[in-house]
Image 1 (tube, rainbow, N blue to C red):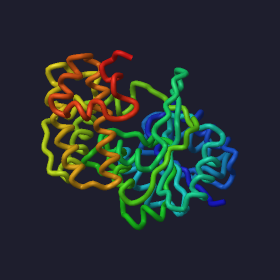
Image 2 (cartoon, rainbow, N blue to C red):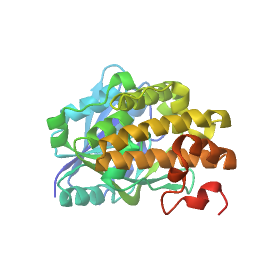
Image 3 (cartoon, helix red, strand yellow):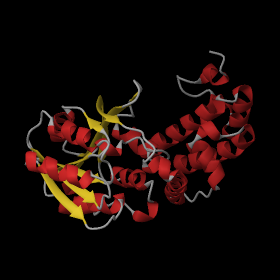
Length: 323
């Protein structure tokens, strides 16, 4: 069994930090240490870390003299780490006791695995999220949306050394999305179909504080992927596909045309990877069009054609919302 280093950036998390640290310290896998980086916290987070480090030798405390931001901290922890298995953690989430042991077992068995993450639940509800499990499906989804939970990922450090991959500051808010997409191009990713951490939602999160920046950089990342296929698209059309709950009926033709253009490019490539991406983008479009019933179906077939609409064992008449 390999030693694990848990990489824990901390900034102004005094409300949740003690519970997070306890959940990590109570892991049933014993060969690990926590590299806890205090990013110039102005609340009691630094004091809590110092107090816990005195009681628990597994906690190795590092401190930034000033706040440098989450991307700097994640990359700095990558640079400081020496173990082969690196477990990302967030200072406000709760980790189940067998998180590390389950992930280490998977990483040990599957040598070609660059990283694994897990299913999760929300701390304030019973909702559980089970992302796609297979590497090919994860990689395909990562051209559009993030299906790889950053706060519970375990990475093989040797892959980072070979690729030199790091989180990119210019994509702040969506840097994890771009990072996992790039990593999926170098090695396999896997989601363990077990709930191994509880995700906490609160007003101070990046996704809430800087929502507009996160969306802007998410769109920029997807447009970067599309540039590989020589596909240009305006932000609104792309946003309608990524966040379909906000789309309007009069936008459907544009979104359908985008997916058709991507589909044609991928068909020309005709690889297993391109076929998987085409399938995921088409499923995403079908899901959007179904929200608008017959009018959505009409918008779909005007761009994608009737043959595409009836293709696949899960579709056919169900596309019409009749069954």
